[in-house]
Length: 226
Image (cartoon, rainbow, N blue to C red; front, side, top):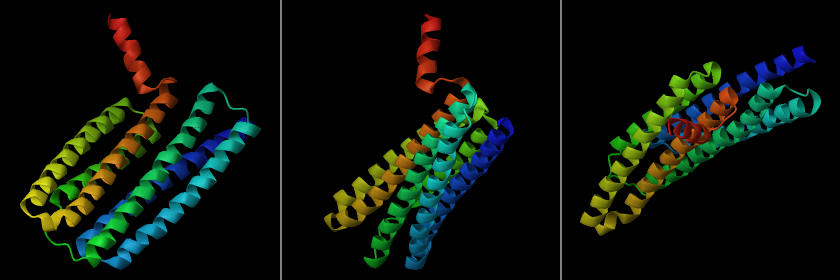
């Protein structure tokens, strides 16, 4: 039974890695659609999201089968439960990449041209760096990667505030720009949420490693310092 469970864990590792890679690809396609103003590429993002959704169902089934049939040990059970939660976070990232692609279609069809979206590209680069670090964290459970994800999430929040400032300034200068500004602001908000989902997933990996959530560890550390 133990050998069978180890095989299941290996499958889960591979599937989570694939799901994170698909989420990264969906984001890359969404930003490529924006840069190239391509409706066809934007449509590909929606197709990618369907693949992410299907993979989530497969992973969830493997997790439930492992819990019901193989009676995992405590740390192994934490891994399975955390994997269930992580698939939810990655699935939402796929959804938000699809939402970004939908807004890109709006930008293309309405021929928006004012905003140069350089800061959005920085947000995209940050999201990809966070996803890559999340994959490393899941593989190695190195706390340094958890710290890096939190730092990158802070960077993402700073970039979101920068986009808001840029767009609000443009909308104040030209009321005709409001519709375009709100569209780009919505894209920025989706990127900010993606950062939050990656951070949430990293906290579940912390739970695998320690049996505690990051917030619980901080409370405990603060108590011990007192």
